[in-house]
Image (cartoon, rainbow, N blue to C red; front, side, top):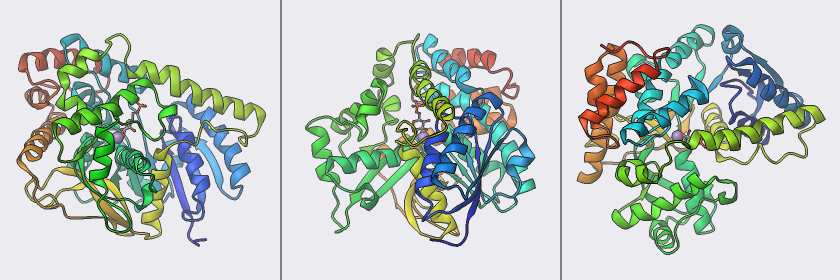
Length: 442
Ligand code: G6P
Ligand code: MN
């Protein structure tokens, strides 16, 4: 048992992901002891349900941990060691618009990719900057672990706006989700599979997967995928759209056999196909509202009513919570575990721009992420990443400069859009829908 205990605030306390993170905290107390956990949300109603659940969970599993929830910023950010950040500016109502508006113009509608991700990005930056400023006011040394999407845009914006910040780490669970699924194909412990990975967030590839004997298991895993398709490790709990997404890994591997791709590349490599399969009236938001959101809130309410979480299985199934907690533990206790995270490139991938925020394997220590060098990458991947980085950078600049032209350039560069006339139509529609949230673009 470690001596030093952490004080944590979970921003976006009323999120559907919160119960899984809270549960993961209770199962990792040996490697990551906790003194206090605070939940913070601007939506008091959603947060109360999760907050009351949290009190019961910790009372039963770890009564020594202090649990509270608040809508007050100062109370939330004062005297913490970690900020776990997973806010969603505009909530599911705006996610729905991000997904449905582009489809009216023949373009993919997706939470983080294409125009949907662009719109969400311009909404997230403002609140994220404000969050960093107030955290620094009340907890100057806290680590900010950010999971807020679109993480690629958020990471780049924060890097530009706070270039001196050394304690912000942007992370995404998709590499670890994939790693778990790859490991299950060869019946191996995912924690013992060492990945080599490069790319941008939601835009990367695994090049090697080494087991404990130093053997690269990638060829074997590719063979299995090519001979039977690919289902995620937790397939039974997955909605159909996620099963379809995992199945596309086989398609990508047939076309581009070098590496194992991140599932999000499907939108960039097959935009027309993905568009043709999508239903413009029913997108992922509808599925989440009817599925995870309903399930999580009903379950938390039930637990609160019964006063016990002992009989509950709904809230602790995900790799997501484990990753958030393990990443914090590895930093706080200098465990130097390897995770795929976002860092400023600075030569790690030697033929990509230094200022890109790349996603890469890194060892996490008390000094933060220590990324592993990748070296030069091949033309196809370099070309794809450079154009996507151009899109990300122009998006951030459009925000910072209030530039319509840069916004139009960004969307035109995005592989899900390409056509500048379409880009303009989508942009104008998104400006209208995001009036409350975006800076004015002139
Ligand atoms: C993965 C990604 C996240 C994304 C989530 C969406 O975990 O890494 O960035 O937010 O999927 O999941 P959902 O079930 O809400 O569509
Ligand atoms: Mn992600």
